Structure formats: structure tokens, C-alpha cells
Length: 254
Length: 322
Ligand SMILES: Nc1ncnc2c1ncn2[C@@H]1O[C@H](COP(=O)(O)OP(=O)(O)OP(=O)(O)O)[C@@H](O)[C@H]1O
Ligand SMILES: [Mg+2]
Image (cartoon, rainbow over all chains, first blue to last red; front, top):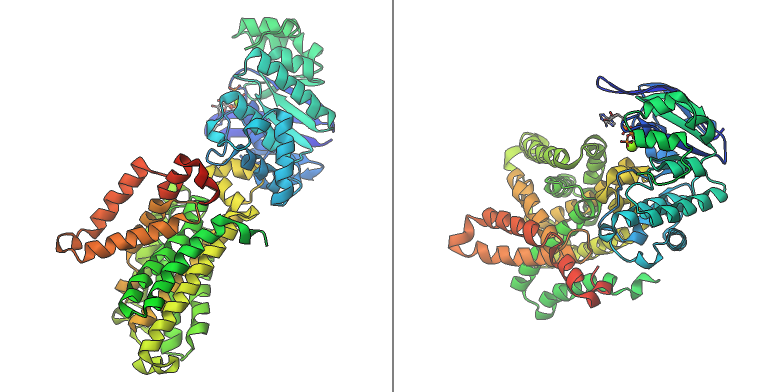
């Protein structure tokens, strides 16, 4: 198991964002993490990579306990993530943004090799043309790709993707899904949070569902999409519920 | 060495060297005094830039290091009979250690909270020195004029401190360039842009920030020692002037925070302006008001400073101005 989460809870004041979540992710898996808005998905990522310490519970990454370790410890161990709300280093160039990932991530590159790696990764995510631009000048879709490029330049073993498809148009979505599939082929374990159901359902080997901070369902996309608890969780959003029930086959999504 | 071929490396150094050689060529002590005060400004601004410009932490306490270093070196020279060279090293090291200790405590604060803490440090440092008798308390310390004989007499000693200041200023510019274009510097700039995102990417922000703070604190003390050695007197009120901290920030912002050249232009430009204002009776007492208005104007209209503005508007200059 590359990642193990044991009974993790997280409270924000009176709000219980996560309640006793346990989860194991085997190496090489691509795991979908879904759930309605406010279910605690991003919070789970934040607890895994050390942005917040959990209120209770323990986290193991590559069999080492990392509970409440700092984000930079986890980054150096080989964990990289993207942010749902993009966090570009605005006044640095696109290339420099990605070089930060390469320099300070798992492989600890020097500036020279970081630069080469950055260009390679930028070509891979389709931002090769923009490497000398300031990150602030990118549009949202490009900033999402920049998030991905920075994470990949760290040469991670585990990659956490937080809604990389949100805000993209259909053709950008299919391009991004292709990119994610290619990353997967490089042997990187991926957990992806996604609201675009047909994408998660098609790409993931396994899906877990959070609702009000609880893990309510877990299984293959097929199993999860027929789980009444999941359908109920999404009742507030009948269109999405219907989409899940049909296994996300007809596409669309948000 | 590749950097020797970079115009961005040479330009600031050449500017300072040319300026620095002018009094030597004209062999004129009055010119020397003018350039001396410009060099003090450039050195203070460039060292502050490592924290303010590269790392994005606004410190109102830069002058504390100037004051502490000066006091340390002055004490070693006047009370312990150290030669100026050894005293210079201690004048750098003691503030650097102080910055390390302070940094571990206050660099955890972000934004305005860090800035406020540094104001407190400025005031605390002055109060401490004023009441600390071994450093002369409120009457400060004086150098015995005999000491200048060790350096070939008063006139010679003044030239010596001038050359030392010129040398130190150039060393600061070299360090500034090396930091700016190193992996360490990339980490600092990542912190400046977004500290949380930088940590997620693996930048060990607490230690990087502390190192930046220590480097920026090493140089002002040496400058301070040279400054007060020349005056032969040191007083708490002169060594810890909060408004000099503010003016140093103005210099960095004016020239362009986060660039190597910016603090050179900003320091020189502001110092010239100040020199003019000080001899104009109307403005003598409103020097700080002018600094404030200038700062406001920069922040509102050219937040990237002169160098940032030029880089943005004149494409061809981007390779030259860094
Ligand atoms: N730093 C914080 N302080 C207080 N409350 C927070 C904080 N972060 C998240 N929360 C709360 O925790 C709950 C879970 O939020 P989280 O962002 O994890 O949801 P999510 O599943 O990612 O939702 P979305 O699909 O909208 O991104 C929400 O009620 C949110 O308001
Ligand atoms: Mg979220």
C-alpha cells in the first residue's frame, strides 16, 4: 500500500469535515474520490499532504507514518498535488513555476536539470509555447495545466489531483483526461477528486464516495454507481445522481 | 565562469565602481562624502532586498542590524583594541546570529504581523542599548582619536573606510546576484509569491526564510561600523533610527524590489533626493513626509519600481536589467 489512512477525523471549530475515514491505496492504482460539495474531499487531501494535521487518526505514506508532517516533508518523500483553487506563483514565469516543483520535489534537481525537466513536462502538458510568460497571464485552463506540470516535475510516486477538470470546456476535458491516463501509464499512483462523473467513472479503477465527511461507499465504478447510499447522497442534485446511476456513460457532467 | 558574461551581473557592479572611483580620480574629499552616503544607502537597500524583494517579507527593522553591528564593532575597537578588519567581521556575525534567533521566532508570522513585530524590535533594540552601560548607555561611545594613527592618520583612515565601504557594497551586489539566480533564490521567490503553495511543492520555508534573513542581516552591521568609525562617535539615537528602516524600504521599492539593480538605482536616487531636500530649509523637516509620499506613489503607480517598469515596457532591456 502506498497510502494508508486510519480513522482520520478533522474538525474545524464545531464543523466535522471528516469523520473516521479509513482508506488504503495500492501502488499503481488510479482512485476516484467523489462526493457532493462540502463533503470533505479537499480536506482529505489537505490532511494527507500535511496542510492540516488531522484531529484524530493516522496517515501512512510508503509505510512511514506521516501524520501531521509538513507539506514539504511529504513533497520530498514523493507526494505531489494540484489545487482545486489554482495557486500559481504569479510573478514568476511558467517555466520557473515548474522548476520549483523539480528543484524541491522528490528528486532535488539543480537549476540546470530542473530547467530541462520543466521544459519536458511543459511540453507534455501542452504549455510548451508559454514557458516564458508570467504565470499570472495564463487563463484558468492553462493554470490548471500549470498545476499539473509543477506536480509532475516533482517526479512523484503519488499524485493527488483536485478537480483538474473543473472549469474546462469539453475538448479541454478530453485532452486533460488523456494526459491523466498517460501519467498513469508512467506508473504514478493517482487519487483524483472529480465532479465530472463520466470522467471519474471511466478513468478510475476504484471509486470512494464521501458525504458529510464520512466514507459512504467504496468499490468499482460500477458498484459505486449502483449503491443506493450514493444515489441518496446526490439527491440534492438529481441530474448528477442520474448520471452516476447510469455509470456516467452518457458524458456531459458539470 | 558563466556569470562573468552576464550583463545583469556586471551592470550594477560597474555602476557602483564607476561612482566609487569618481572621488578617487578627482581626489576630492567632498565628493567622497557624497559617494560615501550613497554607498551606505545602496548597501543597506541591497541587503534588505534579499528579505524584502526576493522573499517578500517587509521588515521595518533592518536598521537594527546596522545599529547592533556598529555597536559591536565599535565596542571591540574602542574598548578591546581590535583592528578594524576583525571588528568588521564581528560587526557582521553578531547581527547575523541575532537575525537567526529573531527569525526563528518571528518569521512564523506572515504579512502585516511580521512587519509589526519588526517595528517592535527596532524600538526594543534602541531602548536596550540606551540602558546598557557597557555600551555607553544613552551617551554612547567615543573613539580615541589616537586610533586613527594605526591607519596612517585621520585623513588616511577616512579614505580607508571609504574603500572598505566600496568593497563591501560590491560584495553585497555579488551575493545578491548569486542568491537571485540560485536554487535557494528560486525557493525564496516561490515563498514570496505564495508561501503555502511553495511548501506544498517542497520548499522548506522556515529554514529558507531564516537563511535569507541571516544573509540580509550580515551586511548592514559592517556598513554601520564603517559609518560610525568615520564619525568617531556612536549614539543609540543615531544607530537605531526607525525612519532609516523606512527610508531603506522606499529605496528598494523605488528602484525595484526583487531585482539586483533596483536597490542600486533606488538607493542612489533616493540618497541624492534626500541630500537635496536636507539643504533646502523648506523641506528639511519634512524629509519623512517626502519618503511617505514617495512610497505611496510607487506602490500606487509603479509597484515594480524603476527596474521593473523598464523591464516590462522595454523588451530589449530584459536581458540587461536584472
Ligand atoms: N480551513 C477551513 N476552515 C474552516 N472550515 C473549512 C476549512 N476548509 C474546509 N472547511 C469546511 O469543511 C467542509 C469540507 O470542505 P472541503 O473543501 O473539504 O469540501 P469538498 O468536498 O472539497 O467540496 P467541493 O466539492 O466544493 O470542493 C466544508 O463545510 C468547508 O466549509
Ligand atoms: Mg474541494
